Amino acid sequence: MNVEYVSTRDNSDRVTASQAILRGLAPDGGLYVPTQIPKLDRTLDELAAMDYKQVAYEVMKLMLTDFTEDELKACINGAYDSKFDTPEIAPLTFADDVYYLELYHGKTIAFKDMALSILPYLMTTSAKKNNIKNDIVILTATSGDTGKAALAGFADVPGTKIIVFFPKDGVSDIQKKQMVTQTGDNTFVVGINGNFDQAQTGVKQMFNDTELAKELDNAGFQFSSANSINIGRLVPQIVYYVYAYTRLVREEKIHAGEKINVTVPTGNFGNILACYYAKQMGLPVDRLICASNENKVLFDFFTTGTYDRNRPFHLTSSPSMDILISSNLERLIYRIAGYDDKKDSEFMKELSNDGKYTITPEMKEKLADFYGNFADQQETKDEIKRVFDDTGYVLDPHTAVASAVYQKFLKDTDDGKPVVIASTASPYKFTRTVMQAIGHDDPSKSDLELTDDLAEVSGMRIPQAIEEIKTAPVRHKTTCEVDEMPEVVKKFLGI
Ligand SMILES: *Cc1c(COP(=O)(O)O)cnc(C)c1O
Image (cartoon, rainbow, N blue to C red):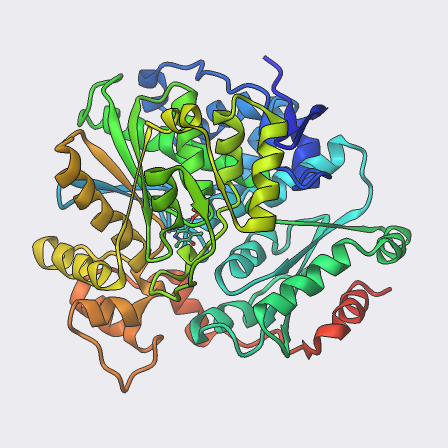
């Protein structure tokens, strides 16, 4: 079966998977979606006998049909290797009567590594397939986590360069240290004298600058984006749900075909959408439990059918979920609108003009797979403490939001099916919040110093990613003004 991709806002234009990966966003501003979602063509028992890379191949081959077997396997082998600190890649831990799917064993100890470790390979392979001779230059503005995961993914990948701009005084100490110590001759990290929005705007202007694009092309370069709406990030995320389910089959915790529920701490709606796609592919998932923090725009949407971003923005202890526009939700809207690009465009226009839209009752009926709820900051801290006191297992604040929401789901529905909770970050990335929650904070210590204390009370080994930044030399010292960003890029590229 040949799967092509269309924009959610104009489905007359069909592109291949590799073209969609190169473009990222569709030219009309829509998101690329597959024209059909293929069914798994291996049985769950067959998949249960495979390792992570083999499962990755069996899932991704169905969605990226213009990649050859050799191409796709080379991408997978390049991505899921000893960069991960366990050969299982995404291990399941049973604690508190649930299965935590640990997606934080990659280089930057957060779940973005699952997709950003393979995206560079998918992108360079896509470039080759489409006869693009230029080197790909990834431009990213970051408020912290995505920049580091993209840097780690693209570092030393032949045929690519990556340039990350971050607000010089607007990221945490651990985040800054992670970025400025990044190795790799093709990496470049720049602190700007401005905030995240200014960095983001500066990057967008460079993407839209046709003069600059020409100069780059003459020198053998072209820009691309590692943004989370790229299908090259979405497809690899389907894999770990299939992997998790089939591990439960392999360990005889469930029988093949038995339904499970899945809980996902959600921000941009990418991770949970990947699980929804896994379900469409035939994975026996029943409810998708969408967990939000105090920025509970998705909970309100699932409850009322109205998506409304007009509300105060809360900075919380789970910053990667502090989002009021969940970009990937557009892919679900398109689907429940009956693959209607006109309708989807109208909703998105309303969102950009009025900050809100309301779906029809027929569309809302199609959301029965989802259950939405939220946990506030106190509930999140209480959940970290409860799980730690009961089991000794330590959750990061994002995973704790999911865990707390799952407890609400249990109360509301009495649905006791086996459940997998996506665990999206290591507690070592958020030591302050975690130590405060479990009653071991020491205000005289830095976040980094607290990692030793966390190791002591939890017995969990300190991840390599943390050990490294304790001693790693600073390699990136460039700073610039916002209006100097294009000059800085050209200088790095030698043009
Ligand atoms: C990005 C992120 C999320 C949110 O995932 P989405 O795919 O944006 O919904 C949750 N937790 C952590 C730690 C993240 O980095």
